Length: 218
Image (cartoon, rainbow, N blue to C red; front, side):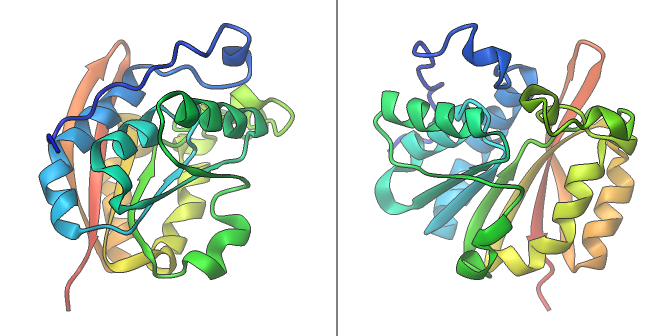
């Protein structure tokens, strides 16, 4: 298969869907570009389980699944029930098979996926906001409102990474400048994971980056 990720067909979605689900934007396409640049490396890992947390429209995991094919099982998680439904529709529209779970972070899946995820993708709610803007009653706000430094959700995930990931697993994370890249790298280093920037782009007022994390080999 070619080392290229085709942008999935989203023609089944409309403006009503996007009232409750994050519409793909510059950050979504930067993540797709980042993963496309990593396809030879990802294939070399021979992943068996790929997981995306916060799938939104499903554009990223569906694109990845179309590229990598059926050698891998694909799992999608989103706290927003509307996003979970839309991700299923996107997978179906593009003839790929995803397991979609509506829960917060890895939630009840942790016992089943412990140390089994070979590839994790997370485009989190990264916009710095007041904590009260993280409104559980507003599905669309949950997709972007990140609380203090835009880090509220991702800081909850970082301690789980060593438990979720397989020994050779790789974790891709999208951030903005305000999230404090250096501090994130240090936090992950404290869990024995090393990180690097694989792609970056200025998009309007946002300076976006995708970080790649791997276990520090002892």
